[in-house]
Length: 415
Length: 177
Ligand SMILES: Cc1ncc(COP(=O)(O)O)c(C=O)c1O
Image (cartoon, rainbow over all chains, first blue to last red; front, side, top):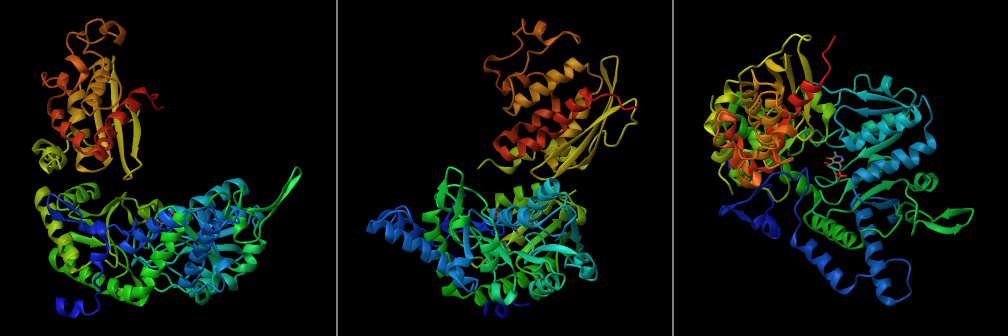
């Protein structure tokens, strides 16, 4: 593929991210760890700063105008996020700390209310620990059974036995996009299979929402979890989308202020959704930033983000293969339609720690580790991988810098 | 930023490429312990055969990065033939070189001297317990000195100490039956 052929779909927003101007050793930063967490554009930083300087106040509890304005911003953020994932109603968005808390909310609040000994929860071999451990905890507490959808050699879900796995299941909880393999799963198909089996469909969309158009109604899912910090927003806030009637029927998760409509000596009455699930003072400034991140991404268009990343991913897969041949093994599907810009790889038999250390000398930031997916690591037969992940602010030069740095790593450890 | 060459000294790369004492020992008579680095998933198994209070043989298996593998390799060379007391003091010195843990107990001169006894003779240690107190004596840490540069890369310290912590566990482990 020639550079000319690739660049037509690229967007150029790097300059809007102040941090990406940072230099180490007077060389530019090559940030390839967005699957871990993303950088923030100027507009998000300004939104939080301005809100904190001019409008910050408690939400929901006070009559003064400043508090009303702050509440409007907070609830406006809920509406923005709802629109972004095509929720039917803003109140179907519950603000949480992150996707991890969102998934815990489902497993604990819904799960403890609805699952009993012997009930089956189906997960997949490519889940993040955030979509495994809460179910393990529930399994230990409740005696539920966990079943696992296996993978194909190409790193996609092996759906050949799906119906049997789902037979009798109460929940099917799966990722929409693997943070290790980059695999994009067929969410609508999986949701339909879950519903056919009478199971709830829970989608971990933590990697999906930042990287492509997300339509929770189109998915027909029951719960969808994601985090602001992976989509150009601040850390400290995430979301759980749930179908309104499900959220209504689910008991509260954490207890405290804000989540009640009445507290008596002999008990309490929870507030209506979504406040019911937002105990305590929520991340207010972060909500302003989350909304600004959504505005920023909508301004670019998620179709354009996806196309940009497909182009860059294709360029990366092609050029890394050309440059290194058998010396590099990139995990996950080769079909660009089925994968995102998450590139976990083995290089020259080098340990991922050593790869990332040498790459860092060239300011190339990649994650080395198990990526919170140890069951998947075992399946791949590795303890860890190096992972380069692309986002909308990355460009061809970043991918080339990765290749150059890998070349140096190979030379450095040449046996 | 400290240079890569501070971390990847030639001797480290040599041990990484040709690790010494790799493999397993029959258990029993050897004991073993398995160590994990939760950060990167690395796993080493240390086999140690202790006879009459002395490390008669030691082997390491498992996988890890250049730092953990070379540290393990150098460790096996350093502890073989040493008394358990000497090994324990060496572990403390090694960790002190990496700026972690208690200051090392002073070097005991007799192979069976206990730590409290040794504490009376502090003259062997340089003031401050800094890494300097291991540099003068090649027979104590020898090649392991090369790992001193790891201090400048804090996330890698756990890699360097993995095999050592596992060795201590192996020595304390019951002999398998
Ligand atoms: C697929 C997936 N699910 C869940 C999470 C957890 O996200 P957070 O740490 O923001 O809660 C991550 C983060 O790495 C992820 O990649």
